[in-house]
Image (cartoon, rainbow, N blue to C red):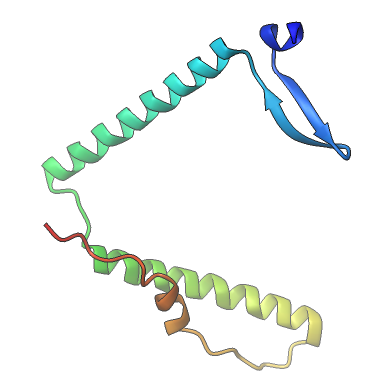
Amino acid sequence: MDTVQREAVAISKKGRTAAIVVPVQEYEEYKALKMERLRREVEIGLGQIERGDVSDGEAFFDELEKELNDVNDHLYRATHDRRNGASGKRRKSGSRIRSQLSFFTPFQS
């Protein structure tokens, strides 16, 4: 316990680090740094709103869906080509990503 009061201590389970125990003062400093970062990010966001530097939520998710589909297709082709050779078969994509994002709804004021 004396060591933990002076420095961080790693706790291992089956040869892998399972937890890190840190002194209370170090933990409090960490929490304060996280809060300060959150405050800075909120200030940046509020400034963007005041300047009108905002995006339409629907347009944002449309672009995100396109990017996720592109990545998903690339990963599918790479995996498929490695396993089965380059057969040229393509997987259907599209609305599956949209359904995964459906829990996001546009902000209503």
